[in-house]
Image 1: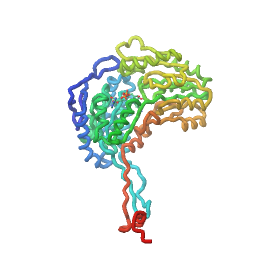
Image 2: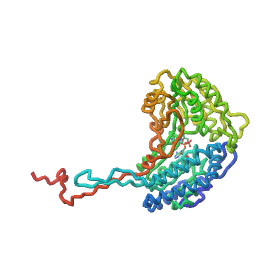
Image 3: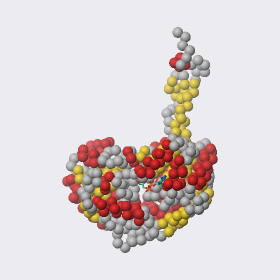
Image 4: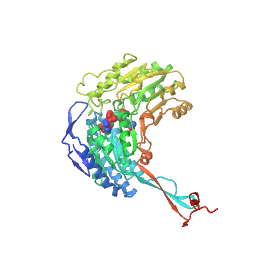
Length: 491
Ligand code: NAD
């Protein structure tokens, strides 16, 4: 599997290759070329050339192309789901029912968004001028994406950018590049011109760094860890690029004493185990009223015990492996250290009989206190911590006791509590009596060290445009009244 540059699949200039492996078996899926700075240069040059025409396409032309793309993706849905499942170790049910339909729906959404350019009405905001707003694309966008939802992350980066008239070079994660290339091939089949979308497969420090520093890249959009996000900001500073960052999370899951406990327990299990917990919005810190604590812990432990780990191609499998053995070791080491300060109620080990894959049991750690490693660090695995609270103020303080601010949920039947929590919890999204659902019309993105900028929705489309003020003199007068502030006062 190679690079997708200027409308064609090409070998990388470096001659370097790496295997994409199925995390559930360790089997080799495909060999990926690893591109370097020369490939980034070629891709950015193609994007720059294509920009001249694509940025001038009418909204309806771009919309029509995206509508065709949605149909192309739909036609390839089963294949996309299968490849996504194999490269990322996702249960096929998740890939089929979430990743692929989500991507198609996003494409259809941006086909519509392309035709909605918002701005203030043209008007005479000064008596002597007519002002109007132009909403324009930014230029060549350089995007870097993570491995946890490779197809959706590629779509979240590419779609708003091209709907707005930008062209793009995307670097997917080097261990999960396959569906990004397939997505790009679908764009070619949909008639989107060569150079509008380019994919450079390569490692972060080589291809990623070259892309983020490229002088012809006007905007960088990055999804990944907060650690790498900081280097993105530094790289962007070299030419003052616009920056869009979707970083880590450590979502609180607040359960009040009046909550429907059965719903909260189901929500905690689904919210913490989605994508094997490798989800930036996953429920990570359950913060539970002391009066419901024992019941909650027992309920989650009970449902965790029934979760089926197994072959990712089996539609009955609920939970797939972690992305790699190395990542499993990291998750396991955090859980093992937690035994010294908290109570591992269930899990905390790989399952038996799935030794070739990087599987890890659903893990519940109770009695975790603020400041401890399992409370502060993003674990990015099937691990939920539980902490007790006594009153509403404490619940909100605990929810906000994190460097992150991506997502949160509150579980209560009390409308006033829900209103307080949704207003005061610092996060890009707060769910009430649910945790995880996303929707194309609504924004996804964080505050604090979870980054800034939005994915999906009209807000994301806006992030990929710049607003230009055009001001027309309507007096035809040479000596305009305002000139007196500068020169020519007689008295
Ligand atoms: P990561 O930061 O290690 O890697 C993300 C991407 O950055 C990869 O493509 C990688 O190759 C590239 N990269 C690494 N070093 C780089 C460098 N020096 N210069 C340029 N690029 C570089 O993250 P990951 O482990 O792939 O993904 C997991 C992280 O992503 C988690 O922290 C998760 O919360 C976050 N995430 C956030 C969102 C969101 O919307 N906020 C969504 C998904 C994942």
